[in-house]
Structures are given as structure tokens and as C-alpha cells.
Image 1: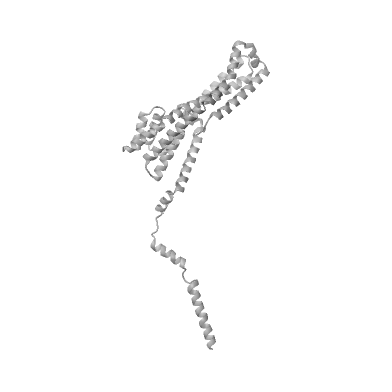
Image 2: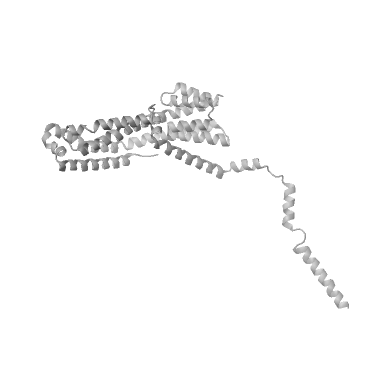
Length: 324
């Protein structure tokens, strides 16, 4: 009887020790978590979201998103003909542009036939003057406006920096730029001010301005403004750093232009030499060059020569064009 009682007591003792050390109603980890919960106050959802937005990873992701969105808008702005007409500063509608192109093509089409040339030459000339020439003129005007805009944009950023440091609102700085800056920078900022006056926000007005003037400088400016409005900070300091970057970028472009001037001149001479020689020979001995225009074999050779020259000029242009 006594050994049985001793065995029961030993079993109870071992079971109690196991219950105490292994587990029971509550674990040590849960107790620690409760203690931490009693000692540390919980953050609100807005404070946690704000703290997460201020981390370097979140800011980097935001900058990447801004760059991708700007690149998408840039591609969209450069594709449509309506956007190209706006970039060139023309008030002509797309319908009027295509009507002018068709009229040019119809006028040029019968001219080679009057000189007894092959109808295919007339068709090719109609395509060149009806589709190529008007689009080239629009692109040339747009490129010139973008170049003038970029050359004075750093000065406009400096005006905004000095105005903010002196206590002026950003909207008043835009008015000063619109009033004092030369075209096309002044009229573009005037349109920006008018858009904000009818209820557009600054990012929306900058997006519309970027559609009319898709330049990297304006893209950088819109990104700086958008990040500053979302995360806060010293706008004058951020724009001052942007002005320094824009001026350094302009200086690098001038250096690239100076270093590649010899290659540009060589490409121009090589590209213009065959047409110049053909014109001079046609003026001295017209009968010698007339075979290229009257004989089918000469027309075929002339067509192949034009295609090869066009391909060579395209390759040379790509070789001397630097993107930075």
C-alpha cells in the first residue's frame, strides 16, 4: 500500500513540474507581448503611413514612378500630329494640316510628267512633298522652339528660387517669368498661369505644359515640384540644386557639340557632295546626265543611288547624335 501511494505522489509531482515548466494556460512569449503592449503605445494608421512614406526605399520608388510616368507622357506627346503642331507653336488643326499635305502632293504629282519622266518618279515626288516635307517642317519648328525653351529655362528656375527666398508665392514667380521671359518661355508660363487661374492644380498645369513642350528640363522641374508637394521640404533649395544640374547639363551639351563638330562637318560634306556634283555636271553637260532621267536603266540606278545615300545619311546622323 505504501509503495503505491509513493508512486502516485511521484506521478503527481512530476506532472505538476511538467505543467509548470512546459505550458499551461499562458506562454512566456504571449506574456512578453502583453507586457510590450502595455508599455509601448500603438501608432495611429496615418502616422504609420507617413513614416513608411519617408523611408529611403519609398522615396526611391516614388522617384522611379515619377520618371516612368514622365517617360510615358513624353512618348505620348511626341506621337500624335496634334501634339506636334502644338509643340511647333502652330494654331493649324490636324484636318487643315492633312489638307495642305494632300494639296502639295496633288500639285507635285503631274510635274515630272510634264518633263516626260517616269510616272513612278512623279508618285515618289508626291509622297515626299505631300507626306515628308510638311511633317519635316513641323518637326523643325518644334525642335527650334524646344531648343529656345531649354536655353532659358534655367534662368526661369533661378527667378523662382529668388522669389521664394524673398517671400513671394510660387504663383507670383510664374507671373514674373511670363512677363519678363522671351518667347517661347514667357508665353508657355503665361498659359500655365491662366490654367491655374481657371482651377487647374500645379501638377495638372505642368502636365499640360509638358504636352506642349516635352523637354527634359521641364520634366525634371515637374518631378521636383510633385515630390516636394507630396513629401514636403525646402522648395527653394531643391530648385536651386535643379538649376545647378540644368546649367551643368547645358555645359556638357556645348562640350559634346564642340567635340563632335568635326564629325558633323564631315557628314555634311559627304552627304552634299553627290547631289552637288550631279547638279554641276547637269549644268555643264546636260546630255550626259539626261540618261539618268530618260532611260529606264538610268532611272533605276538613280533610285538605287538615292536609297543608298538616304541610308548613309541616316547612319551618319545617328552616329553624330548624342543623347544625354
